[in-house]
View: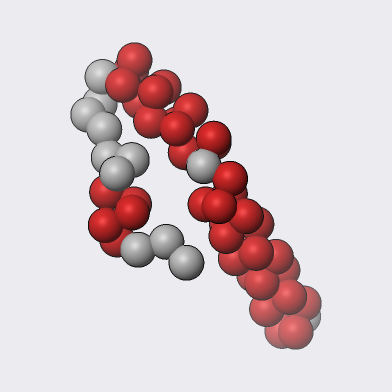
Amino acid sequence: MATNAGLRRYAVSYDPEELEVGYREMANDLEREREADEWSEGLIGDASAHG
């Protein structure tokens, strides 16, 4: 699972070019994307249990 230190690695200024670079880096982080997919799938399961 990602740590706060790992998430800070993606912190960028509000310069549009730097934001684009940051988003590109996040998208290329396959482990982070896998964790995000697992997390979001868990939300779907939580919602269906309450509905």
